[in-house]
Length: 161
Image 1 (tube, rainbow, N blue to C red):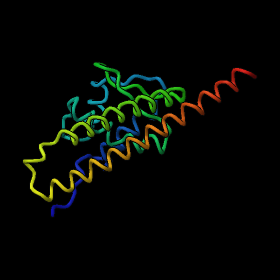
Image 2 (image 1 turned 60 degrees about the horizontal axis):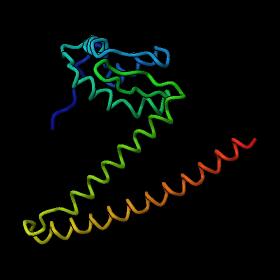
Image 3 (image 1 turned 180 degrees about the vertical axis):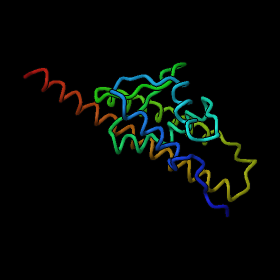
Image 4 (image 1 turned 135 degrees about the vertical axis):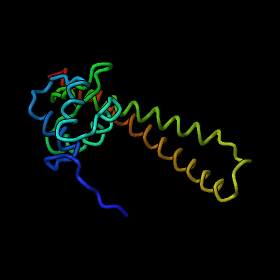
């Protein structure tokens, strides 16, 4: 196994360079792809294209959220915007909607698998995964309904005061 070697002059990882750079800006600031490419390329012989910038942003998202309560979200064709506190609910809702679509896609894939082409072990594991996926989706739908009722009640209370 090859040891990891740091290629950046100052020893920081790409994630750290990104985080150090974005946290200096005010929430709402839009970082262009060119700006992030330039910043990530400093101190290293590597050139960062848009795909590489997107990968670094994805890798650094958890740390940025946990350590600074900020998130970068995509501005199509331009780059990324640094979140403001008011953005987080909408971002989470978008993430939940995307996750629900992906879960439905997974279920459809499993339901329409070519069972006759699978060897017995793979078929058994795939069927088990299908059962688990159906259960997870059923639980999620029940929770969504419950949350909707709670949110409706809260809106009623807030509107009535």
